[in-house]
Each structure stands twice: as C-alpha cells, then as structure tokens.
Length: 293
Image 1 (cartoon, rainbow, N blue to C red):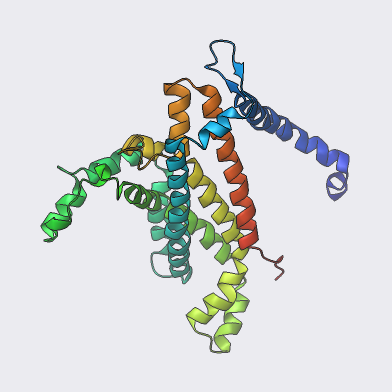
Image 2 (image 1 turned 90 degrees about the horizontal axis):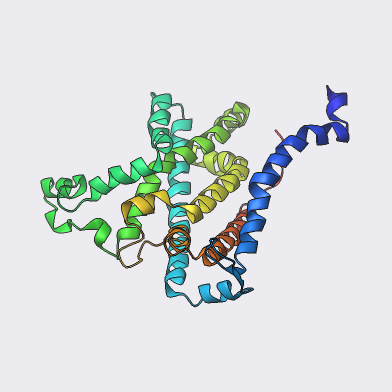
C-alpha cells in the first residue's frame, strides 16, 4: 500500500476525479462570474462590455458601502461571539464534568437546524407585540427595556449576531473540544504533579496545542460571516433602511430583483477577494509551528 501511494502518478490518478469535479463546479463558475462582472447585462439580451466600470460604480454606491461596513461588523462580532465563548464552553466540557456528552449535543443541536427555520423562530422571539423576549422583560419587571428589536436600525444587526451565536457557537465548541481531546493526558498529569492550576494548564498546554485548530476555526467563522444570507433575508430582508444589509443580500437584490447580473457578479468577486484576504489574515494571526507529541 505504501508503495502504491508513494508513486506520484498513482496519487494524481486518485486526486484527478475530485479535481475535475472541483474544476467544473467551483473554478469554472468563479471564472465565469468574473467574466460576467465585466459586462452590463441582464443575461436575457446581448451584454455591453464595460470593463471595470461595475467595480467603480460599486464603490460609489452608498448601499454597497453600507453592506460592506455591516459585513465587517458582522465578521468582528461573530469572532468575538464565537471564538472566546466556544473556547470557554469547550474547556469546561473538557474537564469531564457530569453530563458532558449531553451538553455537547444540546449546544451542537442548533447548528443542524435550517437557517431559514432559525430565522423564522427568532423573528417570533423578537416580535414587538407577542414576542417571547419582550414578554420575559415584562414578567421580570424590565418592561422599560422592551424594543421593536428588528425594526430599530441601531440594534437590528446586534440582534442578528446574537442569533448567529446561538446557532453556531456549539458547532465551533465541538471543533475546539475535539482538538483538546487529542492532547496527550500525560502532559496534564505532569502539570498536576508540578502543582499547576487549571488556568495554568489551559494557558501553558491547552491553548498553545490547539492554536492550529483555532486558526481553522477562525477561517470558518470569518468566511461564514461574509456569506451569511438566509438569516438576514428571513428576519429583516436587509432593513430597516439597509441597517442589516450584507453583501450577499445586496448581491441577490441586484441580480434577481433588478436583473443587473454584471453588477451583482462584481459584488460576488469582491466577496470572494474578502474571503481570500480573511484566510490570509487568519493564517498570519494564528501562525503556529508544527506540533509533535
């Protein structure tokens, strides 16, 4: 078996089918999207070649700039909401507390629910007239804090970030917890013999040895935050007054509502470039050396 997989031709033969599928369904659409972005077209009639004019117009478009700003805020908010909270919960469950497997299942469960369903559920929770959140505030004597949550442009995006955290924090917790469980017990046993506290064990053993997984997790969080669509489309539709507009929702609007497919494709290219930059930045921030136990 080692002889077979040591041959580069055999490796290429095994990789080729997957590469062909990836080329057809990923690289070709990306190239075609960039090609379309150079045209002013509705895909129904011959397009007009405009070069990079769509990109120039994008950065003169106030709504797009607002969507870009919201996306950046969503990325930062998701990182703050997911990484520390997931790391905290994962470290608690790593201590082998009673019911650990049950809590892992409970925290992970929301991530398998359809995003549209999650959006609809939380729309009812945030409803200003009969929503659960306002009702709870009323019952505990904090009625003054009641809001029209999704119709207030100052807090609508925060409300969506909370929903995103509720849905995906368990997913990222499981990823980090799996990395923690791969750390040899002998390291912790030696630390206990030396009298290291739980905090010292986390700071000196756990965190450094899962740093490479945190890098992958950060990439997933950032790229996911840049591509959010379903929650925003269901809960606010980008409103009020574009306060929750994201590049994905604006791309959909320009492509399928106004039929400006070239303009929409240009937004897609910008989104792709932001994802690539996010991956590069994450690799720089979470740079770590290869680990050998």
